Length: 84
Image (cartoon, rainbow, N blue to C red; front, side):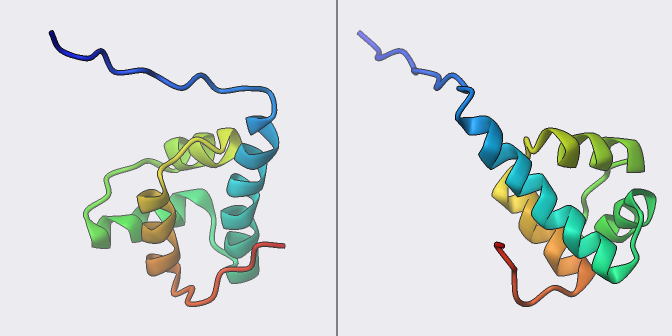
């Protein structure tokens, strides 16, 4: 008998973490003067195919993988991540 995969439901307490995750990347974009569409173009260098609209939606929802966050930081030239 195979074990069924359990999916973790998102809770309302997760909302603050999703918001913070998106805000961290948005703050770096603002500091660098990079728009969502520009970030989407930069992400092509690391083989990430996104539109500016998709990037904006991901950051607004705060629902993206840490891999995506690292890819964003890489293409923006961010070496130190500010968590506050």
